[in-house]
Length: 134
Image: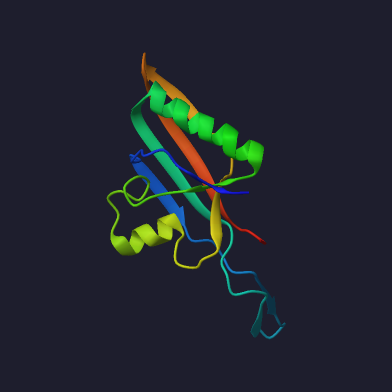
């Protein structure tokens, strides 16, 4: 398993969810709640990207990346100029999952491509941030 760089495309839109911590809550009959935390790292972060009016060549590069990373069980990395482009420095570090989170971005489903007109497409790409045991 290895990191593979995402193509240098800036999304038209993105949605980021930081994930959750491994924990279980127990509630007593009187309403008191106890939380058991099983770890100190988040997991299952989500990153949804939309790209509007990109060239078919750019869309094909994302599809190729999907095929290559899924075949080898790799994960995807981002730079501050692509997926995090336009975000503040503080927000970009979360979107990229750098700084010790331990999360690796993996495709959560195949990318979706809608043809707009010949040579142009809209694309949706969904990632999930998983902890890698290695």
